Image (cartoon, rainbow, N blue to C red; front, side, top):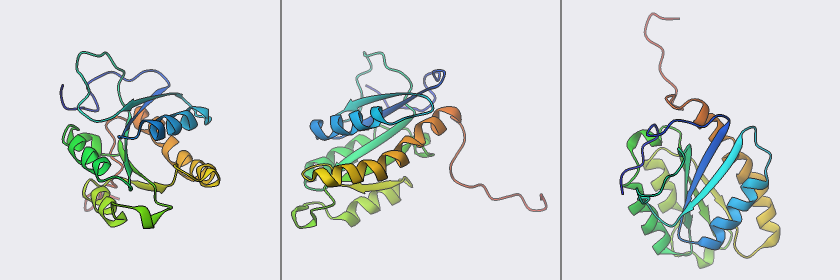
Length: 176
């Protein structure tokens, strides 16, 4: 078991791999199925993990995007994501990590406050999406229409430009 690094494996041709990390197997599988149904410019592969680190004995492809899924109804889910973040190399946070908070539609049942997840995403300078995949079929479709396209645009960009940072660089003085 080791730290995940973005450049530890060679990229596949026209292939993007997403790793979904979270404690809710059914929600992760539902999200993965919805992602695979979407039309994507490259071949998309989605892998699921309950937590990091990943076992080193398993051969796996290069991971282009890690989405940490936090269920706002479970403090265990948040704690699991926080512990898993320690097993990700700092260079992964240059546009290859995102957070997805589920259960946001029923705020009265949340045991994790939204601001906690917002601060976590801000700390790691990574995008955060809120959606509700659990109990409302009409919200599931809305969530897929809003969050999936935003999630799906990341992997091809990440796999095509492994060393580019999404953080805008300041132009050098005198250079125009």
